[in-house]
Image (cartoon, rainbow, N blue to C red; front, side):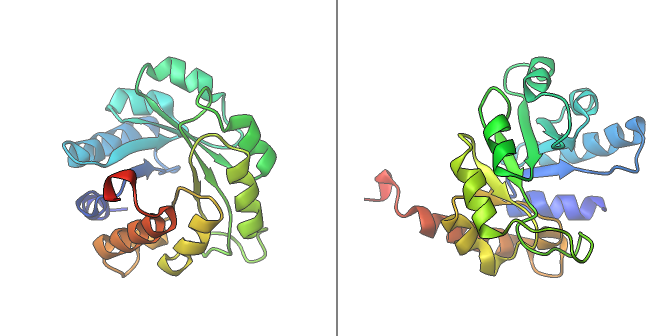
Amino acid sequence: MTLDVFRAAVAAGVDLIQIRERDLDGAALAALTREVVALARGSRTLVGVNDRADVALAAGADGVHLRADSFAGARARALGGRGFLVGRSIHTGSEAAAHGSLAEADYLVFGTVFESASKALGHPVAGLGGLAEACARSSVPVLAIGGMTVGRAAEVAAAGASGVAGISLFTGPADVGRTVQALRAAFAARRGPSAGDR
């Protein structure tokens, strides 16, 4: 991805950018991460690095996002210290139960919920039922991934998700700012008015 994509995401107020460039070696990944961290400085956007806590720390990122089969979240937390954000990808309700506590993660990303262009045709999908189970079994926020669209945000929120994650949703032809605004509105409508709004 180009820095323009990251710049647009920051300008749109995306909560978290996950640097997930598997083809880059450590030095190149750290260099890219430093650039994205600089773009996000002073904004609401946090920056995490996929499965490389060492790179996240070296580049000044806000945290790390662990694969489902990666090392323990508690270890990442110990490496990063206080305030270091730890996320994890999960695929089942039992993984949600195992990793869905603050000792292990600040958030979970569950999927694949729906068919996705980034997965091979026939890749298994969990559907809204699988998402609802994962949300029920986690005590930390769960984000849904896989086939996410603005139109599906309400049903994903109804299943218990706290938000969505995606690639094409935020890098496609649609205006990123409008996409983020529409997603926030869908999740806010599901939560209803806050105490301050009453």
